[in-house]
Image 1 (tube, rainbow, N blue to C red):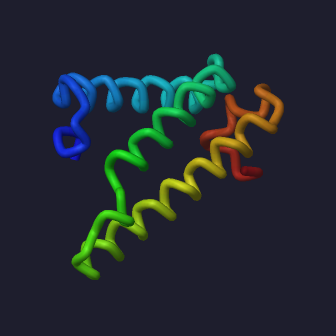
Image 2: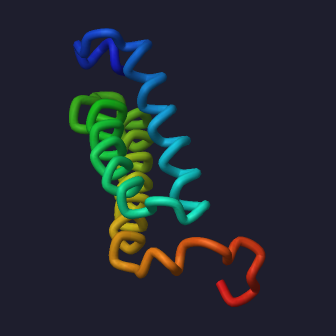
Amino acid sequence: MVQRAGLPWPRALVRLNGAIMLTCGLLVVSGRSPRTAVALLGPTLVTATVVGHPFWNETDQAKRRDHEIHWMKNLGLLGGLILLVARDPADFAGHLGDERC
């Protein structure tokens, strides 16, 4: 997908995107700099969605529907990131095994 979008260094960009998502996800779960991590994850997710799932370009109905599903899934993930930004950072850490969550 990245190659079809005409972006330079597609392999490096995919690896960079994966590293950002993994690192930021770990930062959110650990409670270390969750807002900074979310601030990096949001634009990365939007970019990956637009480049990776351009349903508006698909003529095959099955492929178009598949891209629409992934587009909506990523929109839901973005909504979750927005909710994380709105919460108190102290709410992020220490609740992995907590039944109250």
